[in-house]
Structures are given as C-alpha cells and as structure tokens.
Image (cartoon, rainbow, N blue to C red; front, side):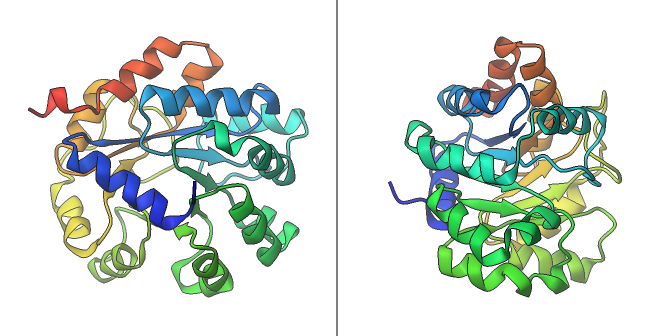
Length: 264
C-alpha cells in the first residue's frame, strides 16, 4: 500500500462520499508502553476511525491540556522517543489500515534532523503531519521535504485568527484543515462553543480539503453538533482518557456517532 498525502485525502473523501462524517481520534504514542501503540492503532482502525493522529511525547507540550500532558509524562517515563515510535511503525505499519498523522512539536524534529525525520516518517507510512508550534510563516523549513515525500502538512486555524489569515491557512492546508473550536488548550469540556458557524463557513469556502473541528469535543452529542457544519471532528483528550481507563466500548460509541445514521 502506498502511503502519503494522496492516500490520506482519498480515504477522507471516500468516507464523506459514503455519507459519513469524519472521525479522527488522537492517541499519545507510548502511553501504556510502546507495545500498546500498534494494538491501539489496530483497534481504532477497525472501529472505523477515518484517520488516526499519533502524538509524540514531548516535555513541553504547549498546546496540550492536563489529560494529554499526563499521557505524555507516562510515555516519557517509559523512555519513549520519536525514534522508537518511527521504528515501531516501520515494523508494523502493514497491520494498520487507517491513515496515520503525526502530531509533534518542532523540537524533536530538529533534534532528529528535518531531512532525516521526513525520510524516516515516509518509510514508517506516515501520511500527514501536524506541528502546533510551527508558524505559518516559517513552514519553508520543512515544506519542501514533505512535498517530496508526499506527506500532508495539516494547518491549525484558531478562532482569533484574522479573516485574511484564516483564508491563507485554509488554502495552504493539506489532508484536512484543523479548525480549533476554543481559545485555549486541548481538553474535554462539558460544553462546546456555539455560534461557530461563521468561522466554519469561512474555512469551508477557502479550504480545498475537509474541515475538521477539534479541541474540547468529548461526547457523541458534541460530535453530532460539530459535524453539522463541518466535515467531522478530531477527538483527543477523551480518547486518551478512555484508553487509560480501558473503556473500549465508549471509544466505539464516540466513533459510531460520526456515522451516517445520525445525518439521514
């Protein structure tokens, strides 16, 4: 199987054409031990995840809330590194059908070397990349390597961005556009912000790829609410929490809430 940006975008578009919304769960690589990584990826893929976001443990995760921070600490205590995650995927990628997206901060990439990182990520079957602390204006440091490797560079767009910046980010995004729905860090919330329609409309108009809502989405009701005006959702903290609790049925229910039965 050929992995990369085209594979990711094709899978997402196929799901939307089938009448379902997109559901992208996030996991922290190495939380529970590195040997759990492939099991979690297989479970999510078989449960119907549209793609899977894999977080790389890092000591200073500025965009992450308490749940993901704690998961990262557990992974770091297991001494899991970016090299370990890539090597695990290299050996086992054929066991996971879903597209895989890395979410990592810039520091681990710099430490490994940008060119080496992209080369090895390609060999590991990584289809997309999210770098929360890489400004749009500085993306040329990695963009050329990613284009050559056909790995999608996914843009994060915040609520506080200007109309012009929203347009630039949405136009530049590959794979999908990540629409942040709160002003703050990741984390499950009892309520998600309403009145996001104008923001989502701007993104949908400018983006040539699907627009997914993320941050603060933690219940089937949130999934349904956010998916009414976007192409689907990204769920992080709640998935991490449920895996930690070994509550697999609740994970399945969250993923199932994105399926077409709700929208028809």
